[in-house]
Image 1: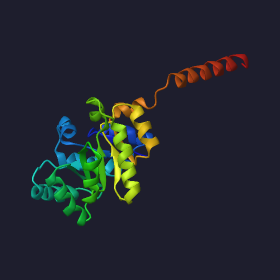
Image 2: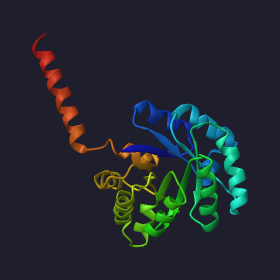
Image 3: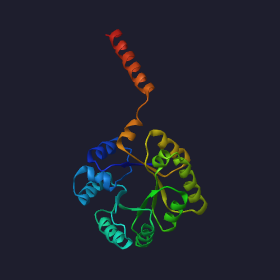
Image 4: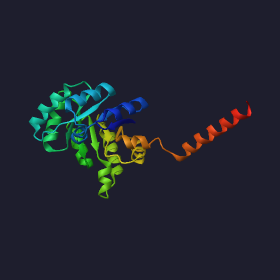
Length: 217
């Protein structure tokens, strides 16, 4: 399973890339706005670090304007993936862009029906939001199971990006189900390292090693 980082912060991206576990990055207007930098410049900077898929979201709502904006974003770098919301205009734009070999990540997916439409329109990636479904007492991971099954049934070429990930168990469940990708905030990625028994084990090993050195002086 591939892991994407959901951020527009360069330090977070550089740190996670150095760990050797990051395959791509997803951004959105909110994340980029937090960085207070020109949008196109930041997307280019991210592409230069990651060398993998980098989702850049359109802000237009009309399909014609989406296509125009998407083509400009796609020129920034060969790794750019165009992020488009699940709407009727979004589907229309996705169809046109996919026919021109411009990769699309269709986002804000909350049902299997929406995912099916996105894949039919030619989306390269579909992004179901599991955390937001959990927030309203729905089952986000059940949605992932359904989309995985639909892809297997009809051999769609789209990959699932599990989004709105809130904790490590979302990632583990997505991996067990067979999702292609999870996109995670930096703090969630960091928390994947943590286990109290690992810390206890390291402390024990270091203590034993220190005792051994003292005995053999």
